[in-house]
Image (cartoon, rainbow, N blue to C red; front, top):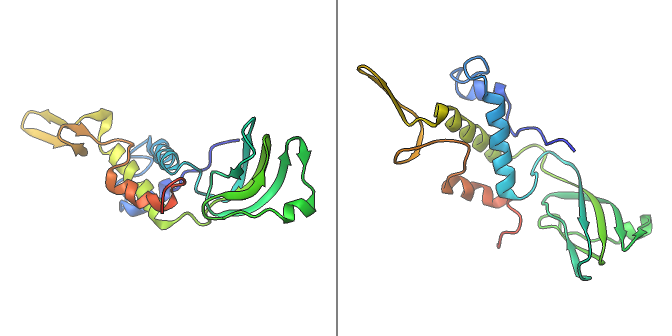
Length: 185
């Protein structure tokens, strides 16, 4: 399955930056938006958006309840437990907490296809994607400072002599905690 689209578009970056960041001025803009989206998804531990089918496979575990690694679970579309495909009647009995993914499905070998994700992408995630990508574009080649004669340019920094890049700062992680699975309430 192909990676989901980035949370924000190049056009949105151009609009937000009032034309300062475009694909013409920053040829790697789309790659940085994809990288920012990937780091956000990695932090959240699931794809977040869009709404899409997801497959969960568990092999050889005990018979404990199945946890689907997602939030905003819209439906459970198919279930196979210990080699038996569940029919429509059994699927109707599936209970799932749509916000945290716990189900009443139990079995040793389990294969579940379900649909989950936010639609539209939450505004805070769109904004954060743009912010992280802009920060990465603001420190070309990882330089912190450049000087030529009497002209000096200081690039984006995340700490003393640390160039910005595609990474999440602690305050940004706290924004994403609402969408992160496996967190304690």
